[in-house]
Length: 176
Image (cartoon, rainbow, N blue to C red; front, side, top):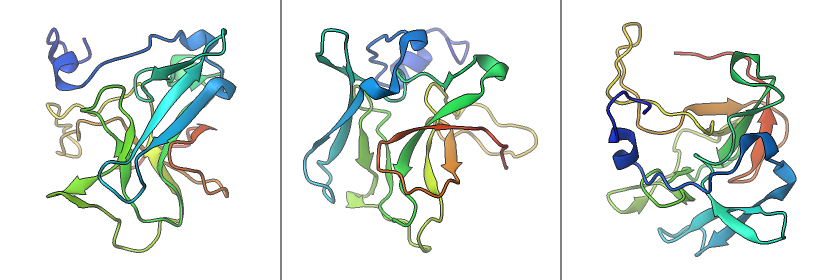
């Protein structure tokens, strides 16, 4: 398993996957569906993949969408970015790691919907599928534990993406 302790990762999250084959993944077949009203704790954005037979199969954006296209591992040319917070907005959406198939929902604290309070983002904020920040690992250089979520990412393009939009992106670097 990812953390070397058999089953720990699987128990921590709702690891339900449609088991799509990454080599056959086609962005044009990815669909999203809104459930509930935006601006409420019931809102969810679910992900679906259109099969060869035309049916929509529920998928996890975290576990089923491949990390990259056009190459593998360190040779990947394009990585997939899942937008959680579009640029110029403040509602704090996130992949629901503890829910089956990991829909996107608006984050809450003490039952209250969360919003970013320090001005609008001038970039699209989101996550990279197939990744995980291990809270049991404390790097020597930062001394900060992982947050138990997919890796955070920002997309610096000129387009405002939609919540849940999958965007092929180039990796430029990272910061601590």
